[in-house]
Image (tube, rainbow, N blue to C red; front, side, top):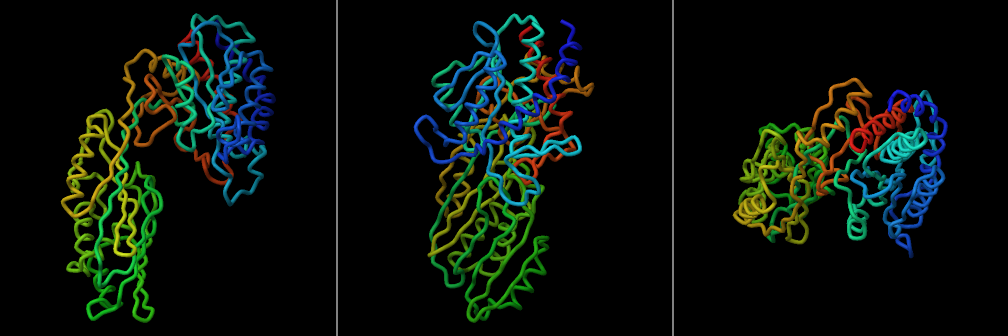
Length: 461
């Protein structure tokens, strides 16, 4: 089959693709309270029903899997390829200059919540399928589109799907970045606690989510001869900390606030951790206080500006997936109790069990009781025929070099054997995913459909 005919036909489908994307974006399909037949809320179920209705109208066979997910296909027999997209979204949030739940086309861009994550890519898959079906492109193996509805909140849709349906041998999700992600680091979420009364420290708060570098932190201290605005300001000046401190006095209390720079936990070196900056200061000014001694231990184990886990005894690196990263992300102190959390992303040469043992020992050594869990790394060999066929599709359509990527974050296929992430973000373009005025380019919508059509032919043709 001459793929140029397929690509030319896809070009003619622009109006239909934009209409379909508009229909899906109009469903505010973020997770809400479950109802009968709607495990993630009525809006998510409505969006799934609409997508399957559209696919049925294009002549595809569809299957609703308990309201958790759905499939669409036009091939017979067992599917060897699955393309996994999701219809759920995060709520619109603030700051939009366009209506988030309807598509707005301006200057070749389509704005709306989900246009890039992940309704736009799903539409590209649907119309790649339509082109192959309408033109009668011969395929030797079956494939199917799998539409999920809970990617943003833990992927329980996939767990249900795999309990009730057979997952194809090969799988890709257009819910990440080009060219192709074949390695996703493992992740450990470590929670730890300790108790200590304090004569100096009243409260401490830093960080809200375990998977982010905290941009702010604060504490309250009791004023004393050793603890004064002057003494704290002097200590700050000697510590060489780039995060910004402010110190103010209110009667017998002194409040310290720190402003740093947030970053995703998978790239903690891009941030400036306000929490570890505050801990470094407190370890210097109240080292003999019972709570201060615990803070000294944390300062030694998770030093300010260290992100490779060396001081915690978990440093690791390999050639194919890179170095381990560690973000100390949460610490609260109230009523004599510390509760903290850290996020680790680790390479394929390590395991949850090994790192949990090492980190647990380091935390117990400084007086904290750990509670550690995680998921193993995900890896599909870069020299697998499946990966090669996807990269060939990318190169054929874009005329750019295809290569495999390793990332610290997790995608929709993490933990699913044979699964890789293939599209649709490209380097240098901020599509404002999860932010205000999310968008996808119309040309990108079309190009993605061509890439997916070529990929289907490469794998199944």
